[in-house]
Image (cartoon, rainbow, N blue to C red; front, side, top):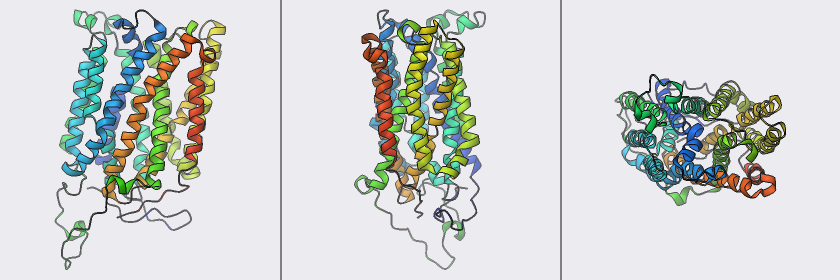
Amino acid sequence: MIARETTPLLPAGASKKLKTPLPKRQIGILMALQLAEPIASMSIFPYINQLIRELGVTGGDDAAVGYYAGIIESLFFAAQALTVLRWSRLSDRIGRKPVLVIGLSGACISMLCFGLSRTFWSLVISRCVCGFLNGNIGVMKTMIGESTDSTNMAQAFALIPIVWSLGGFIGPLMGGTLARPQDHWPVLFANSFWGKYPYFLPCAVAACLFVLVLFIMTMSLEETLSTKRRPKLTSAALGVSSGEPLHQKPMADTSLRSLLTPTVVTPIVNYAMFAFLDISRRALVPLFYSTPIYLGGLGFDPSSIGSWLALFGIMDGVFQALFFAKLVDRLGPKRLFSVSVSSYVSLMVVLPIMSWLARARGGVDYAVTLALLSQLVLSTICGMGFGTLLMIITASAPTKNALGTINGLAQTSASIARAIGPAFTTSLFAASKEHSLLGGNAVFFILFILACALRWLGSRLPDEIQVRDE
């Protein structure tokens, strides 16, 4: 049964209603969908730079790999930015589930095509197809908002960064481990197919995950759009007494123009900026790991990259599960977001220090490993920013029937930022190394300045969040 909002969140110090229990099956299925997304998207990170080198598009110039890898990583978000708002608004008309089915099917097909790609342009097409057909994230957040009320919404949204972190652990580990299976398990993968398509296996496993989630969702997920939901035949469920005539409540104005108020726009702008910095970090770190030491990287192979990214994922997930809700209660969403952004500022100082240590010591020793661990800790703290912003964005909706549009706006803004982020950052990294801009550290300096700007922008967020219930 889908929970319905009944009372607003009360300010601190006021009496509080008992929390409504989360609809566990509904939220569990949505979290399975959320888990499949980062597993698939992040599974390419450990080997994408090696794949670009093997395709020969750089002409043997290792410093130029970042340009092409950034384009591949950005195309999904560029394509998604063009369509995600349309998918979200379409879900307001035809229902949430049909849009999720289209998105999962598109993601499955595109992953298989990515694994079978042998040219740069086939990689481009497969990522674009995935982005055009995938509006799942915005619709999923809308369903969470519609499946909860004001007493348990924060609890549900706190699960999103935890599950994303789990996907961030499984995805890179899977991509790094299953890439080039002939090298690891030559007896099992002796067929020439695996030599011709050495990166198909992680893509095929990711596609199977999408099929599994699609099956579970089709069988068990309950539609949350009120006009498409099966009506309950009891007066209590309908929200009317037995003597009252059933009538339709007047719908609030949910046009785009009516929603573009400071209360809605400010959190969305913060979300877009944070998404830009986050995806830039996620694209920059594996490129930094794979770049040879003499060019200012760490010279890791895909397996090592996958292991370090997986370690970050598990650290992030455990930290979010144990401390996120407690920190939100203690600090509040706005202050916790400020802490997250401040950790990003510190991270942009640690990375060039790590580069200098690796070159000075001629490799990765205990000092570089210590810097790596500090980088993982800062990245984990930084990851808490998304959960806080999701709570603030959802609370900014004037009514529930505006959730789809607001989440669509937020996801469109984030997709545009994520489309720009990888290409901008990896290209700036390559240019920094090729032309020795600021000693090869220009990319870290630029991201440092942008993070400081976001720190100021976050100060414009509301001090407390309040849900306006219908």
